[in-house]
Image (cartoon, rainbow, N blue to C red; front, side, top):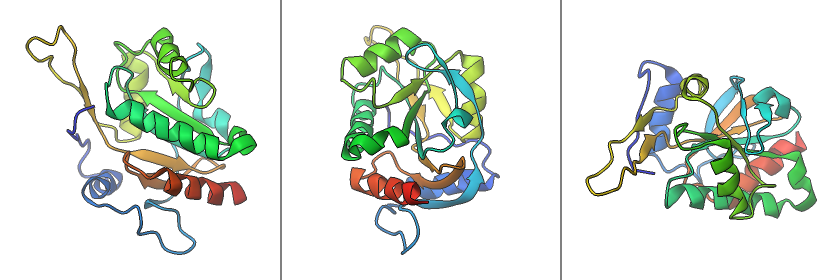
Length: 206
């Protein structure tokens, strides 16, 4: 993953919130009774349906009744994306048996390479296949999801001598969604696992 950040629809208030997320370090600035991160004011999370790493259709609305952690990555990212997925798996493990009451969801930003088979391989080779749901699809299926979640995505040109390998620049965002399907907090992808766990514990109590 590159350090580039792309913004879509700059006049939209949620895009402005994402800009604030990019420039502020707010992990420790929550107040009592609030979740860690940027308050998204319980905005309904846009629904979508994609295909998971086992080849099964999964809609966001299928996950109602569980807190959802939603982020956007790609399997060919050599450094940052595996670290983020590893932190999601760490938080999953912290909850023990209660982890089944939470959904950790990744949506691909690289439909060209992120096939169902590649997504399954990415998770299984790291032991994450039962902890994280990796959703992918065709470009036409993913683009509306990126747009709804203000995920600017740009396929970067391959560098000379890179053998055709390319990186994908995209928004730095992790959505925390409650059991009723409402967006409650926006965190950066450099989140502290303890802060995410604290948010999920609060949502499980609701």
